[in-house]
Amino acid sequence: MKPLNPGEPRQIGAYRIIAEIGEGGMGRVVLGLAPDGRLVAVKQLHAQFAHDQRFRERFRREVTASRMVSGAYTAAVMDADAEAETPWLASVFVTGPSLKEAVDAAGPLPVESVRLLASGLAAALTEIHRAGLIHRDLKPSNIILTGDGPRVIDFGIARAAEEVQELTGTGAIIGSPAFMSPEQAGSGQITTASDVFSLGAILVMAATGRGPFTGPTAPQTLYNVVHSVADLGDVPAEIRQLAEPCLAKDPARRPTPEQILDFLGPVPPGVAPWPPAVHARIQQQDAEVRSVLALPLPIWRPPPKKMVPRTKKIIAGVVSGVVLLLVAGIVALGLSIADYAKPEDPGTTSLAVSEALSLERLRLVDPCKVLAGRFVQELGTLTPETDPTYPARCKYTGTQGVAFDLQLGEGLTTSGIERTDRVAEGLPLLRSTISGGCDSVVQLPSNRQLGVLIRNSNREGDPCAIADGALTGALTRLRTHEVDRAGDPASLLPLDPCAVPDPAVVGKNMKNAQSSPRTLRICEWQQNGDSLTVVLGRGAYSPEGSPVDLGGGVTGDIREFGDSNCTVTWRHRALSDREVEHVSVRLLAKEGSGSPCDRTKEIAVSIVSKLPKP
Image (tube, rainbow, N blue to C red):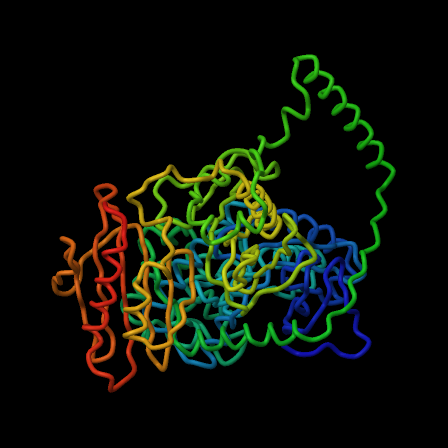
């Protein structure tokens, strides 16, 4: 990040400009802040394109198509203005170095990271091609390495620039010679297979630090791309098997992105995609973003309204007439617009917000009841998952790619949290967009370290509008009793994890320790280097360690890790073939205090006697 120069514009369109990200062959990229709080990367195109009306026309067309691209491995286009004095395009900002920066700084990626890179790029190309686009400039500097995978940027712009160059006859080539396809370097017909060739060259570069055709000069590199065999001598065999077919001179012999995904198979969950040095750089950039956001921000001003051509006004009038006729038809059929479009009644909001969002109350809520149905008009009918993994979370899906997670009583961190000017049920909405999607958050009135979240990791449509709308609807629904779980006196879920251990037993083993809820069903005590955690859980349960008698006919499992860490777990009751309610007690003791397992067992025994009978 670089500070802006004095006198530079502090707003482009609706976006306040905060810092400069970098500059490339197509234009300059700056960090912007959208009115709804999202971070955006705004690319201002160079003057050579700004003064060409044919480029503006093609740019407008390509941006329209680019906005249809919404895959998980692309940075979605949010806005653009082809009519501005300097045309610009805004896309979702993602934190991380480019692949070029990462390899230059940390060296070639390990094989498993290259495989994950290949999977993400193939998925991105699948979405780009599905939208009718060809990237045409896929290269390491157009690939951002984020904490959960790669992101492809700048799709669609290169095509507009290339078409103008072809029409003007300058002979200039848009793209990077080392990563072009032979047909692109030799003025052949460009198809989606051209992007696959670029993908193969990128995998070689990621695995070795250099491209497969790189020569001492750009003309020599172009000659190698068209006529020479790829140099794959240093490529690991596993990556060569993947990259070599992509580098076939004949486009018809290259695999499709879908075939590449089939070859690679599913990506293992929870895998850190990059070497530690790359993840450290991602964290550094997160810190840089937070630091510039902490500086005084430019004053936001409404962008000037665009003039609507008279022909468009005439068309708008005709459309309005048609809409009125349709409305009349609906009324004639006995349907009112209000009944047809408005959400269902959220129920009787008999609870005050402070009561509805208390920890005791939220432990009684079934998160998969909160938004099941049509309670957020803009999102349509929402369907909850049928087998949630966590009792305080539920994933919802709707039409047009809407998908998000509702999380009740989750622990909050201040890192990356931003304030907005929006409220819901009298509570300020907070937001986090650092990692790419959009999370909408409210803090619990009784404990500001916990909150209700809508976690929207998708980039389709307007992620923050979806998150804010869903959270607003959820807060209203939480004030009703329609979202309660069915009463079950044997269940652990309504219990306070901070209250289930005997205080006298905790005090004996951790003098003067104070309890602190970490989530609805996790409580923690800390004192003089000791840490006690109690978890009341639901889900899969796999016994680990040695059997231990906890009294009352309960047998648990005890496991010691080294000399300072001991965990006791046990099954409270079975719910189905795969799920149980279970309890975990973990004591992490300071070094030199002796084995913690006797203390952990004593605390666990005190809990067993206070639990409901299964």
